[in-house]
Length: 479
Image (cartoon, rainbow, N blue to C red; front, side):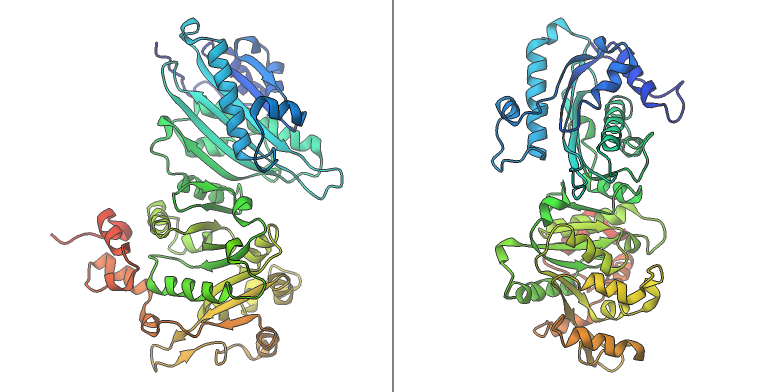
């Protein structure tokens, strides 16, 4: 039996939460369970209030007591409850019960779903704002296999009641989106904020899976989170899966490399390898608790005008193929990047960068939006255990090498610079590959587009082959 779910024809562009819940309830084919821990049954209550919920809700559960929760869903090895693994266990358990207790042969027209969330709202001291995981497992039609959408949220309001309200709204939007917007994940993502203040709640991780989303690349969905202003930074691993930044960065030593990586070159890799060698020899750095991040800013992606999603995916796939964790951020200024890291770790942070980029951070015009100007920015940047690992450049005209000892700054910045230099906050990379100083990604990119010879040798092993095979960066083979 095939059931078709139609779109929003006949509804306003932004139906109310009540209208969405009612439409779900009045659909005789949608049937499932709600399992919610930590913020009340905030999603389920909207469906109860809307009326007609008996045709939609098989069961709601809120296993607040930890012993009850562990008995139902099993204990977590780390003892935590607000985790993605707990969410997965909740959805799997509730779906298994639903299928067992409501046999499909008795409900041949039903499309089953389970909505789950595990949340920690703001604490009494109001020091911890709270966060949570939410997900839905659902069918597109009664015979279809299951699809899944999982997301992580961070709360920004200072009252638990307001956080609960935002969570409830987003949960209704998620259920509604799964059944009525699954064919367009980008729109589904935007509609998650329907009737919610954009400053109230942040989505910093989302993953789509299942046959309905087989053509969805979750890295591209990460980019949408940034473009839509839903978060300021996202991460994905070498397998292309979106990962929670907090999980990656928490209590870690962090070495970050910012670049365009258009494409990634031998210079990028040499900078990474040589800075990593120095970084891991720092007295207070444990290599086993160190994370390397390759970061691309939104402003860099927009450098050529509007963001080209194909161009973004080309960069992302190449970095992932080299086994790196990639971060996309909305932090144009370095101090904002460092400040972001400080939310997750107090351990050593390192920034590896070329001399040109380093000189740019001493340009006062970048800090006009700060009341304290460059002093405030550098105070935030070097407040924690930050060091800059400086990769030299060669002057294209006379061949001279520029490092921390002879770089040129505005006269007003010289004494300011010396303070950080002589306090060992700036470390030169000396054992660099001198032949790599002639490599420039912009030159390589032009050669790729024009299909000129010689660019392949300036890239890491395997990268040129990927570019040619997948026709990345407008590469067109000669006939």
